[in-house]
Image 1 (cartoon, rainbow, N blue to C red):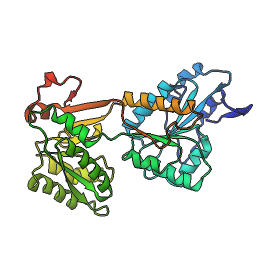
Image 2 (cartoon, rainbow, N blue to C red):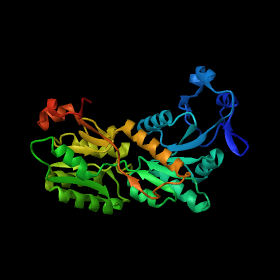
Image 3 (cartoon, rainbow, N blue to C red):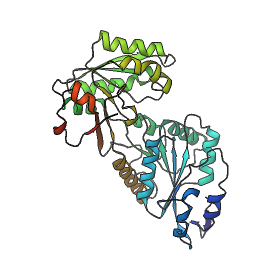
Length: 353
């Protein structure tokens, strides 16, 4: 959608209707159904056209750079609904296949007031963009990335909301539900996460939990290495459970189907994951992750704080923890293997998958 400049301000006009019908083909084409003023203006929802204001209205442009996965899109949609009519959110698909040239084109095309960076590929590309354009000073809010504290340090004029729940917090929550506490928990991880693992291990030690790590070489993420690593943790270390790092390189569809799921199919112990999509009867059985609606509220609040501070992060480089967690336990494991009293779990979601 084009914005016209009048008196030095960006304004939207009724021409957006025409552009919605003839949306140009672009390397970073926006997802169908992008939101303007919290409304869906995809062609399939064109019946809402009568609600567009005929007179020019100021809009702050929020450029959301995100993968196409449903969990990212749900949070983006919630944010766009909550921000109000003076904010226009544009969503573009950015993932590991997106080139820096395409990324540059998106920023130049939309000239956003703020960038919402979601997932690590977008954060890495934005860091590269800033290196190439050192004078670019628009603020960024980073969310739903792994290792948010590292991602925000590589980007100027940015804040972050952490998505991963620390091992100590997840394991403590789960440990309080079961009769036998978790004392020894295995972690299979890429060697590039070694510092992260050590930090998590130190935190867990304070709660009497030993994290036992098994390293996979960064250039050796193969079926055999994953199988051997899991066998070592389960059969030799005899861990009480596993804590899974949400590493997109280690948890691909190929490695899940060929190594993780076959190895864990008969593992009748806790497998703690940090994203809901990893919950299944053949893989994760307990999850702790940011509640999507609460995360959307938190993102919206941070955007307002940044705007009220003259479009500058009040705490440049700060990382905020998730405001609220969603806890999910698979019913089969809860009842039969973990001995949980389902009636006493309170706000914990019990799901059958």
